[in-house]
Structure formats: C-alpha cells, structure tokens
Image (cartoon, rainbow, N blue to C red; front, top):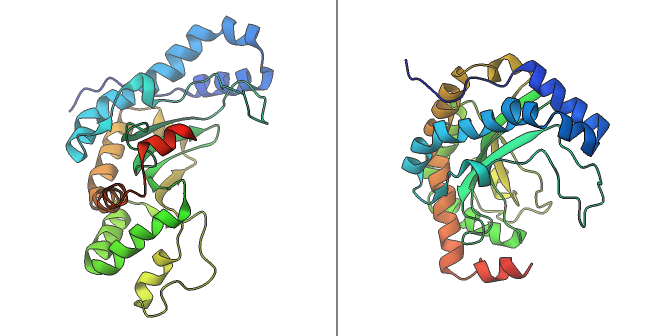
Length: 241
C-alpha cells in the first residue's frame, strides 16, 4: 500500500475552523493558529504533494506548489463587500500559473463544514471566449462525448453556472446541445460524508477520479490553447484587470 503524506482532516479540526470563523477574531485566530495550521493547512498542502506526480503527468505546466495552490484561512477583505476575515471552507486548485495562463482549465478539491467535493472546471473571464469550446465540440463530437463518458466513469456530474437562452447552434446534433448552451462548464462530485476526508484513502479516490477524467481536461486544454493562439486570451490583459 502506498504511503502518503496526507493522513486525514479530522472532525475536530473542521469544527475549530468553523469556530474560528464564528468568532471572526484575530485574537482567537492567533490563540489557535498552530492548531489550525497543523489540522487544516498542512493536510491540505499534503494533498497537493501527494497528487503532484499525477498532475504533472496530466499536464507538466500545472502548478503544484502547495503554498501557492491552497487557499488560506485568513481572507483578504480589501475591496470585498464580505468583511468576514476567516474561512470555514478550504480549497485547492490544480492549474497552470494564472499570471501566464489566465482562465486556464483546472482540477480542484474543496471542503465545507458539512461536505466535500472535487472535479474539473473551465471558466473564461469573457464568456464569448468559451465559444472556442463549442467550436471544438462541433469539430470533434466523438472525442467530446468520449470525454463526457470518462467524467461519468469518474463519478463526475456535468453542470454549467450560466447558459445561453437562445439556441446558438440550431443545426447541431441534439446530444451536443446541452453543452453548446454553456458559457462555462464543470464536472463535479460532492458528498456529505466527511469521514472520507479523514483518511489517506482520499488520495486514492482523487487520483482515480482525476486520472479517469483526464480526456476532459485534455479537451479543455486544447480549446484553451486555441484561445491563446488566436489572441483571445492574453496574459497582459489579465494583469491589467
């Protein structure tokens, strides 16, 4: 059996994270800082370390720095209407360095006080850019449907947070139309069984799901690189935002 760095995120650590958010107090945070670090931040970074080899194999441009890729407990509230300083949910992204590859597709893992989830997402900061995904779907429909099937085999469910109301491609095959309405996409899995993140077996679960769903990530990356090659997405534009 593989020995992992990650040993689990304990229920008492999640409870402390929630309590820290409830108090929303620097003094409370400082008093429990080491507990939160050892119980929450370190295990999250260990997940990143344990998955880094697989993620590099999927895409050698994916950033696997555990410090930069894992969310922080302390929130930067500058310019944010929500002034609560501390989180009760944590996440990590497996994606290319955002300053060089803005809006790139990504894998993710996250947990909340009563659930956890993971999957693949692709959102562009200008929704019209996402039509490059549509173009690739229409050009390679069989490859797309195979990628969708791979996500289903990985236990991931399709969703889009925003869609076109009007049919953009009236002549497209019906089986493709649900995806051609999307302005963004994600293939996700969620569970309320938090006992599953309290064990190293979580790493095996994530590895299996991410590896099986690899065809979807590769499809998204091809569409993304088309956007960059056509000059639709430019790092310098992102830096000015």
